[in-house]
Image (tube, rainbow, N blue to C red; front, side):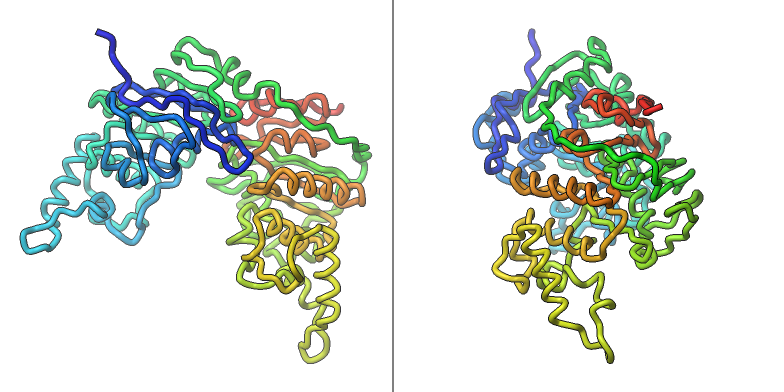
Amino acid sequence: MVLEPILKAKKIVKNFGGVKALREVDFDLFAGEVHALVGENGAGKSTLIKILTGVLEPDSGEIEYFGKKLVLKSPREAHEAGIVAVYQEPLVYKHLSVVENIFLGNEIKKKNGNVDWQRERSITRELLKSLDIDPYFIDEPMGSLSTGLQQLTLIAKALNYNAKVIIFDEPTAILTEHEAQRLFSIIERLKEKGVGIIYISHRLEELPQIADRITIMRDGQVMGNFDMNQVTREKIIELMAGHTLIEELKRTPPEYTDVVLEVRNLSKKGMYQDIDFKLYRGEILGFSGLVGAGRSEVMQTIFGLIKPDSGEIIINGKKVNVKDPSIAMKLGIAYIPEDRGSQGLFKALTINFNVTIPIIEQLTKFLGIVDNSREKEIATRYLKWLQIKAPSIYTLVNNLSGGNQQKVLIAKWLATSPKILILDEPTRGVDVAVKSQIHNEILRLADSGISIIVVSSELPEIIKLSDRVIVMHEGRITGRFDKKESITPTNLLNAATGARMVYSRD
């Protein structure tokens, strides 16, 4: 008798505007197996998972579940069908207890309508014991638990929904080694119960231990499907990277003589360790790596948002103590964050306000009165210079497209006349035309003598813009590429998944 998959995605297509996120993707899962799903950022993994969990609907194609067509309109419908996702950062209600989180929306009621807490506690204990977990913490608020215990709670919640399919999305990215090994043991127990596991991970080294099969995606397509014991790491990397067409930019590299920023032995427990690099005048230094590698945290430290445990930051040959962003700005550092909503922009306020807020002291005259004419002149200049599409400088940022919001954020920090510009995911969420405009602006700024660090999860962007590239993996530098010809998708992906690689100019 030939076993049939319990879950089958057939010819799944999903487009976002003109972007083809999924191109006729086939994927299946058997009961009691772990099927790994890998691919670089933007390969289509997350979109596929959102379709399998009811967050998105496919444009075409269909899902079969236990041999029958399944149409999911919401995550709740997926839960009720027994398909549950456990994410890298657990989606929990931190002020509620473990018991309350497990039964939220699925409460057990007494005849009088009150919650049957005794039964809920009893079932929670049994669920955790079935995973070989001591249920001592079931009355604790979720916010007081480690990430590992929060994940275990969500696994117990999935079992409470009688889950037949559990999707793990980067589950070990922020776990300790002990917590990761405990998770692997629990996954083995889930397999024994007949649960099918979809396992997404950038940690290729852990897949032989946990996965039975692997599917590799690139650019919205399935590039290969293998039994885990029949494929090498090198083959996986090759299929993930492919032969990406990189747009060439004509640019004269800097002279590498004038060091404007040097970082020595910078460490912060749980974030990054022993970070060393130099930034030269007029160069574009790319920081590559996978999500969670620690790149953003290093940049936030340089800008004074995070205090390091040890190490030195040297600006123009002088050791500095960057206690907060105001000191960084006085030193000529500007930081354009990844999260423009919560860290970078006041979206409910005008373009004019956002562009000039970092230099408001310079625009303030006697008795604290703002020089409105200068403020207007500066905001108008950047509106035109960066081709921000808006009726006027008094347009609310909230009313702009994502690409134009990103331009406002760039304008905000260019107004400070920085010597060092740090761009964290500068083109995330913008369309192709705006991306090209931002790239050209980055090149123009570097040519004018500004030193630029670009943090990006997009390999083509890193390769296109960077004079040199540093790659991080799990808080450490694993790759240094000083020669332009060494900056290739395969080299960067190898370093991003843990292989140590150095290509110096010397």
